[in-house]
Structures are given as structure tokens and as C-alpha cells.
Image (cartoon, rainbow, N blue to C red; front, top):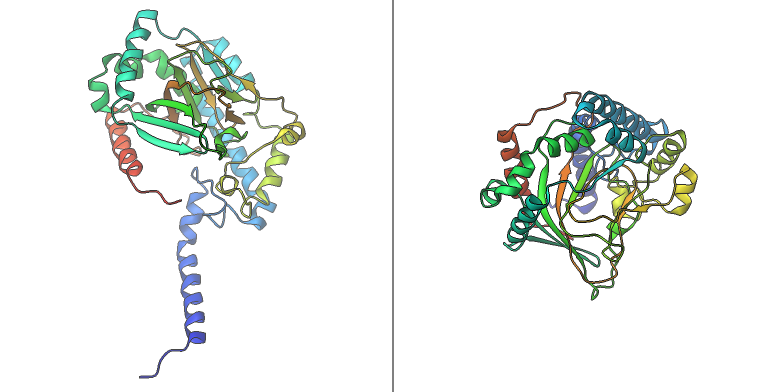
Length: 337
């Protein structure tokens, strides 16, 4: 039987690749109506031609529009002064969130949960330990369970996250690894994604400047003409960026970028223990540089949904359990790189 030559194999492989790309095109198009953000993985999101026509900017404007409507409908969940502060700054700081005795009990439970085989992640010189607050953990931690079901807690989280939903919560312990010379990418000012999303912390100990506090650029969650112009320029070169975070849709900003957008310098959110901080992380933020080896423990709160879904949602414990099961399966998968 005659052998197939290499020149014949290469066109065949190229043809198969083209066929696969055409077959996946409907999926890529559907992803435009979701929170898909990677310029590298989705050729439509990363298309220079489409972004030159305004695709990224249109998705951003629509996502913020849908979020604004949902957030307005949920505005009764928080006090008027909290709504005003959030609209102005993009984050909320709620000190003395729990009564002192309840907070002391929660601290004790959180420490016990954190000591029980946490998931360990290292990003540059930062070590993060995460312990998921699922039904098994909460069965041994009644005060933590009460917090996650508390109407005031859920009201603030759902308002900032613009969705009626139970958030993912974990006990998070951060510390700096002075033996590692690599830099932590979370310490560069960045926006998590193109649409509004929620991250938050109930801090279990005081956070002073030496502990690497959360830093946020006030007002950077708002869409202005200058911000949209900057986003447009970034979208034209994101796919080919040497920074994998930018190519994945998490744009980075420096002082010159902030000046171009008319934004101030970041504010370090130094707080006392028992302070709840909730932020829209489509605004620019970063992890502060810790100056000593002390840990920074907190209850970490995360919520991200399809920004184009107009439905307010519902707080379903059954759905929360399904999400937690999926998250645990995902987090146990081996990671490359």
C-alpha cells in the first residue's frame, strides 16, 4: 500500500482544523451572551475586526445596563446611605457587622474550619489557604451557618452582586511567602472581568497597612466616556498580549492608565476585625503588599453570574448545593502550568 506523504497530510490536518472551527462557531457566538471573557479562547471575543467595530464595548455597556436594572430592583435590601456610598465608590465597608459575642464565636469556628485540610494556592509570593463553607463544614459551625443565612448579610451581598443568590463562601487565609522572589499577579491593579461582579470579605482580624490590605480605585466601577475609550483600545490588542491575564480578559492598569481614565489612586481598605467589605471587582483593585509574615484571615465571599440574564434569581438551598458539588469537583481537577 502506498504511504501518504507529509505534504498530503498537512493540508488534510488544516482542513480538519478549519472544519472544527466552523463547527464550534455557534458555541462561540452563544458565549457572547454569557460572561465569557477570554480574548484568547473565544475567537469572536478576541476578534480585532469585531472589536474595532465595538464588540467589547457593546458587551460591556449592555452588561452594566442589565446589572444596573437588577441592582435598582434590589435596592431595598440595603440602607439609602449604603446605596449612595456604593454608587460613588464601587465598594462598601460595613464595620462592626456582628455583635461582639457572636463575632467571637464565629472567629473560633472559622479557625477550626481553616485548620481542617484547606486547599492551598500559591500565586507568586502569596500563599492562599481556602476552606469551603459547604453543608458538611457548616454542620460543625452553627455561627457561620447563621451568618450565611442572615438577611442583612444576604441583602448586602445580593445588592452589590445584583442577584438574589447564595454566594460561595470560604475561610481564606493569606500570607506572604518571603522565600519566593516571583511577584503575585493579584498585586497589579486589575479589573476581574468586563461586567460587574462581587467579591467580599468579613475580616477576622484587624487589617493594617503591613498586612497587605485590599486596595480599590474609588469610582472605577462606573462607565465613563474615558473608561470606555480605554476599554476599546485594550480590546484591540488583548488577544496578542504577552500577559496571560490580559489575554484571558482581566485588564491591567498602571498610573498612566488611571490618569487617562480620570481616576484617582487606589485606596487601601484598612479595617478593624468584624468589618464586612463588599466590592464590584469590575472596578480596578489589587491585593496590597504585605510587609510582614502575619496571616490575613477572612470569610471570603464570591458571586459571579451571567450578566445578560435579566432575571433577579432566587435563593435556593438546593441549587446552592448543586453549585457547591460542581465547584468541589472542579477544584479537585489537576491544573496545568
